[in-house]
Image 1 (cartoon, helix red, strand yellow):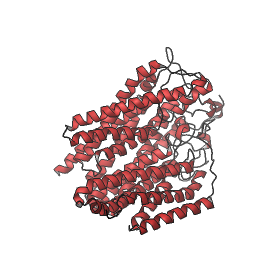
Image 2: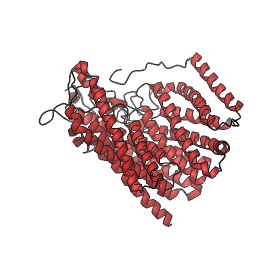
Image 3: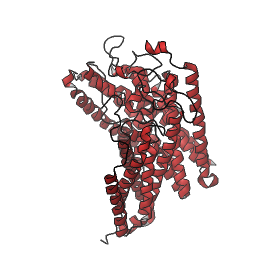
Image 4: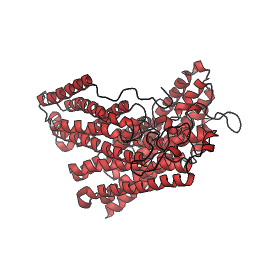
Length: 280
Length: 298
């Protein structure tokens, strides 16, 4: 691995054979869910949520180890971890809003705003650290001019580096990424919670109030699991670092969306099998 | 009304816990060298620079803190189920989580440094002896504060998640906030203190970390002392703001407009932080100005 966290290694295009295999797995998962007597609507929700997480992760500006030395722009931590942190903060807000209001739209929007808020604060503190503590202005290494503010970067980039800090476009990407990831995570949580609410009382032969904490905990832990699966898949697609929506690597996003949808479909099937009523 | 006043009080207390947790978390990770800058600590002996820096990065901070806080919260939750006093349960849970952290640090240091044996990097037993207790103490503060904050969310604010699940969620968020804010300061400002201030580290300098202190070789305790000057408090502010504002907007505005009040407030907060960020960025560009050729070539 190079000091810059690895150059593009996976290519940009979509592998047709891999995609067909993936879509077959996705369809088989949906068919199996239907054949086992579950409604496929929650699974569709889970698939959309997973794809949204994979999509959102690509917006988050992550610089990894090079960013910690001011050698590359972005936030100095891992892709999957940062996205998971933001998404889980969103999941916290979304789950709370769902409990309080029971309104699907409010809960999903609450999750999205929670993730966006976490990323906005984190990105601000990253820039404050670079500017006030390290005396380093923000500069992108991938583009010469910020598409939103019009700031130019080459003259603000110190020699021997690929840029540093968080230019405004990266800040914007971080907030949008947290927003989308929080939305996707909360969507998965709500779909799973509905499945468990309906299924758990039947298989455990208990009343719905008694299994409420179990249903919430199961849906929560599975939602976190989905988060990590999709964030790690997206991180593999990114290979190392990404600056945000303006980065050339962002063009790889369709591949991640397909991969995350397939993984979410299969994991969604597994997570529903817990409440499979086998009649025993 | 009384419920809202209590909610605001709990929110403030949780925010304060989060601030302390963030500061302790970043300091712990800098003393233990767990964040991304540890790539340089690992790289240095391979470039011929033998050092006495602690090195325990088996995983990133978010999953590590997710595990420790979930363990602390899980044990505390189990003890509370058998009617332990919550304060005692949280302390005992955090103590057990800290022992797990200690085992992790020891195996992390020995494993990581032993893998550098072919580059003549020795395993210093005195480093384990002197630094392990320091990282454990900081980790205790971070885990205790996080678990206590989660307990407030579960018991006083009635969040639907169980305490261990809250520990996992906020442990991961704590690690994400702490590593994002604190890593550049530890990596650039401390490990590459010999490089020019106000510029990134040239890629060609990778691995040449500062290894000597005022007297003798630099220890990771010196790094903790240095990073508490900015990175620790900044991480604390970051995590404290995240927790405080997330709770604040929900507690105060959840009831308005059928739940949309909290969301609108969240969007307003995001816009406020966006403006502050833009101001910081422009301030940096105006104050420092572009790099000149003379500076760049010297």
